[in-house]
Image (cartoon, rainbow, N blue to C red; front, side, top):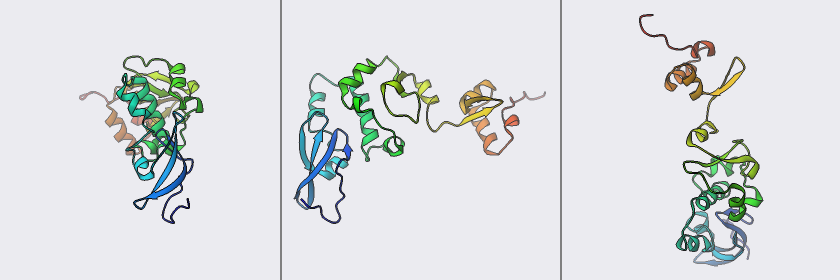
Length: 202
């Protein structure tokens, strides 16, 4: 089928668990595409439905949810795939949008689970190198505090050869985080900005 002039060619693009193969026909003025699901099944559906995130698989994802239940690890795996491959995913811009990929081995849940095992209580999937891909070598189960320190939006400050994020510098210097942030925003010299606040009257 030849695509209409105003239709986007999505061949090879992945949405959730579905990879676009080719357009097949039009239905009510909308293009129906043939997709390949991660489970191996081929599935035809209107592309806009898939791009919106309303449909994420050939149906195997829902069947799994309605079966024995979805494990926490499976949910973590699916969200990882989604934010790295689905352009319409809420967090795509911070992951797939900046080049973060998922190791080809991990495109199958069984391989991901074999490498990472069960998620310890109170921990979530974290990349050791925040600019690296999702893979066995670059991932670990981290606490919320560890995740926070590894965020790409953290402000890293290097002073006298030591590098720490703003939150850790504030804690070590006995400062409030917002106090240190305001000092830095005012372009106060770093040595002065990191100086602990003196008690009143001294």
